Length: 56
Length: 195
Image (cartoon, rainbow over all chains, first blue to last red; front, side, top):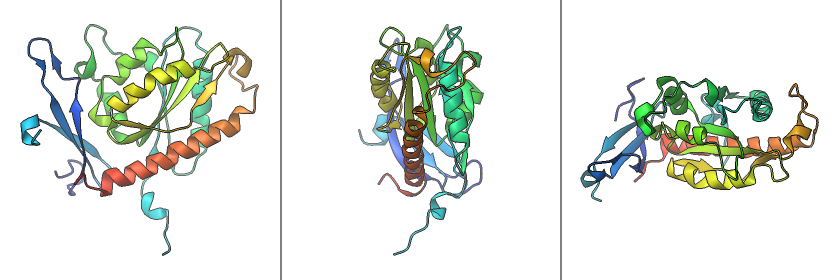
């Protein structure tokens, strides 16, 4: 991921299940947040992905 | 091999203090202001006191659905958090949980230290114990020092002046550990890939 603040390549440092993504109709959706930080400016970013995309 | 700390401190650390109660007459505000003033004395650290009583979060929904942009931006910028949490009925404030739950991705791999406050002799230890698993699930990394303001009415006067100076070295140890963990985790976030 490119840093949205300075354009440098960000470091992917974590995958985190998002238990907050409970849906009353569908149940837990087990979304995963990929977390990134920029070594240049320190900006933190994340994107939501589905378990299948990480091989869970 | 010689090493320098400069490579770990290209930017000041941002370590906000969160005051975790909205109750009228709260003594925790004195503890929060003291933690904020002690943090502000540290070199290369920027801090801010975030009072949950001033955050206009709705109570007709919860979680990231009620994310406040200003709070989210501060949590995104933060390298560590110092949470001041009074103990109510052996637990922490429900509104503190409500506020913390409004973010998640913003917290991942960041340090947190908890400051307990109570009118009784245990200094909020039971509330702190209840908060620890919440911190873990939010993606925060807890330090192993706490500050416990026990019998808080004897620690501060009505104007918030610290009456018991023995708290200062405890706060110093707490902040040293919190800042060390903040630096280590920043380095990890920015330079160590997951795989």
